[in-house]
Amino acid sequence: MSDLMEYKDFFGTVEFSAADNILFGKVLGIKGLVSYEGNSLQSLKDNFEGAIDDYLEMCATESIDPQRTYKGKFNVRVSPEIHKRLVLYSAAQGQTLNSTVEEAIRSYVMR
Image: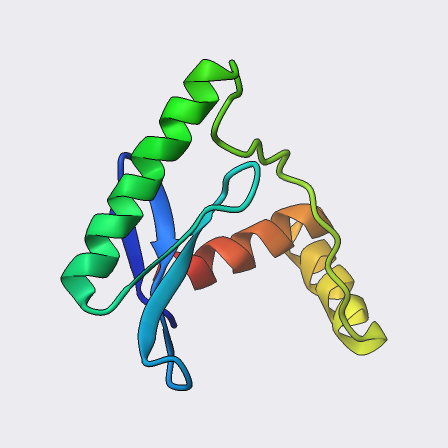
């Protein structure tokens, strides 16, 4: 799992380019692309925070909601065998397929 930075309830990636010998990242969960870079962890963090501040200022100026809205719906493709097993498992548990999938995902991401 990649490391993430957090600032003002925004999250950004931490990546390294060996070819350019530089750290870089992008802000997750926003409308648009905001990226940053640095030659040390501290400069990466400072540039990340500066990018967030600039982004929030731009959003305020343009009356844009900065956070992406998540609807809670997305498509997941699985093999027919897994689909069948999920349906059977859900029925045996007395719950919907959606409930089973949400429970499985929650269990995985909350550990």
